[in-house]
Length: 195
Image (cartoon, rainbow, N blue to C red; front, side, top):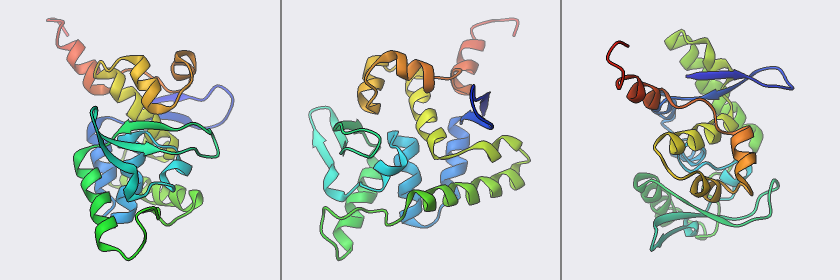
């Protein structure tokens, strides 16, 4: 877990390692909650965008299976972002088994509810792991983790901006990119014999 003070508010920005992402996702046995959290940390969605995702938004394209992200309160721009196969299958399955139109959102909650789900899960993780950094993790940290994980995997920064809906590289670099993921730091550290 990487932490950094906010410049202009209390609290900290957080970037989770892949192990910590898995720990967080494992806190959610309920399908709806797990989908919501996975949409944030695996697709980089904002809270309001999570609440708009419907089964019909998962599409197969020449670039692979993508999630169509329609405008939110934060932005009025459409974009497409990759979606992991298991998450795409889960969302499509929800659409097949429930008695709701394919354009009905899969997460029936509010942004406040999403924040509560994260707070409950991270409090449990803080108690279980003894890691105090969990107290700072919020929904937006999942988007931040997603973006930094992509960059640490050498995904082109402009592609990350496109998938994340950022207008320019400066916005991404100023607000979302943090230190490299622990995995990237370990990979680089292993290049040095004496470390």
